[in-house]
Image 1 (cartoon, rainbow, N blue to C red):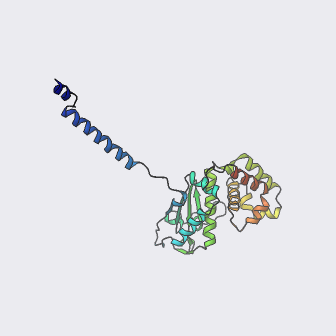
Image 2: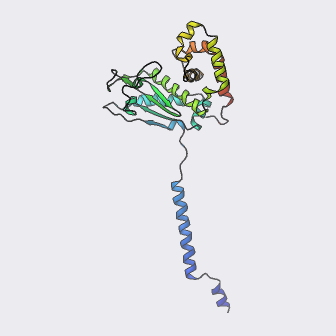
Image 3: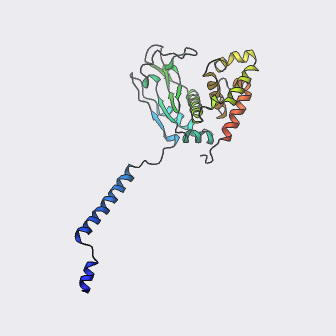
Length: 252
């Protein structure tokens, strides 16, 4: 009876096999789930992709990629953090035609410049930086590489626009727009003429001014930087204080 009792305490062979099989299946499913789990999210400096060339364009150079990456890495810590946490991405290519092949003769509605000659453009939080303009308007061949200074400025400008989107279009904030309009109203006529792109009665003008102000806050030296400082003192102070006030707690 003692032997029988001892035997009854052992699992039946079939039950043991089923339990062992279930354990193996659970371990296998856990391993599969772990292998399919997303890895650590890439930081902004790692979310830089190449737009591969078309139309026999040369591939974007490693030097240009280096300029874009180091410009982003050297952003003020809180601005970098906002772009990083906002999921901003960067694409670097030779010319807009490589991404948008039907844009050869597309012109900007504001001043008529060719879309394919732009050094950069941003769509919400997707930033594009272009290394070369067209060699001749209307033809797909490209000219020489832009200067280091122009590529860095183009990168900073796209960062400014992406930052605006990360902040839920801060350039449309009522407080900013009120100060922006006050600055224009008190601006000297000559200065207003020189800053006409940023003062025009168009929906994108406040956004363009906001982008230029943000570039100044990153330490960039732009061709119109001093004029922007003089022309938009109220708006510039508001943007500066607002960005600093929403600085993420854990900066890079």
